[in-house]
Length: 112
Length: 113
Image 1 (cartoon, chains in turn yellow, purple):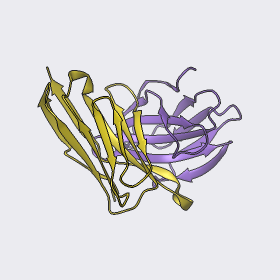
Image 2 (image 1 turned 60 degrees about the vertical axis):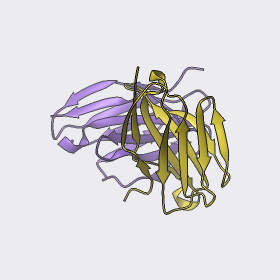
Image 3 (image 1 turned 30 degrees about the horizontal axis):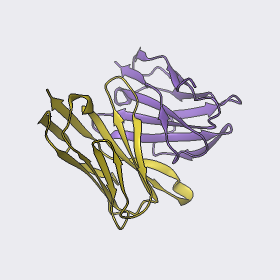
Image 4 (image 1 turned 120 degrees about the horizontal axis):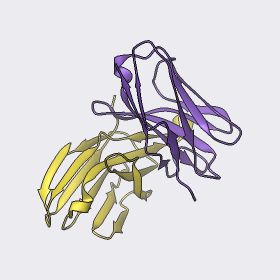
């Protein structure tokens, strides 16, 4: 059972376009992380959101954590070819199963 | 600081064989987690080690095992390999717990023929 569903699964856009990636769950997470993975490499952390409703900006990337801490979104403004990669959200749940649960991933290709 | 290193980077095995993968975490990181990444299932948590003890385990069969040494280096072993074990195996280290920021290695690409 996949607890974190990402949409879209694949996205191919032209340089300069805007896009939004969604990460949804029916479960509550104590925090949510976003990673980007490039071919031949491991994922690299972009941001961690902790508070419901929190918005964080990283240059052209805007991350939002849902008010109920069940979902998150990543918005990229004016995408560039360097944004190409696999975007993964990962939720942390406390208690006995204190581990990261990764989303299904969104593969983004930005064409020059 | 040097990043997380994994060896080997690529491995080809046949069904029924066993394999051992190695991971050296970032200096000072005590938690090491292992993940399996496949196109169909995405990134799946295998297990986490902290201070030489397995602290958390994912839903994988007993053929998958691991250990951590006193210097925090970790190994994972897969016995009786199956075709479905073909995947990218990622190791990640963090300072304290596996829900802290994960610093991933480049992975070991395992192909089972």
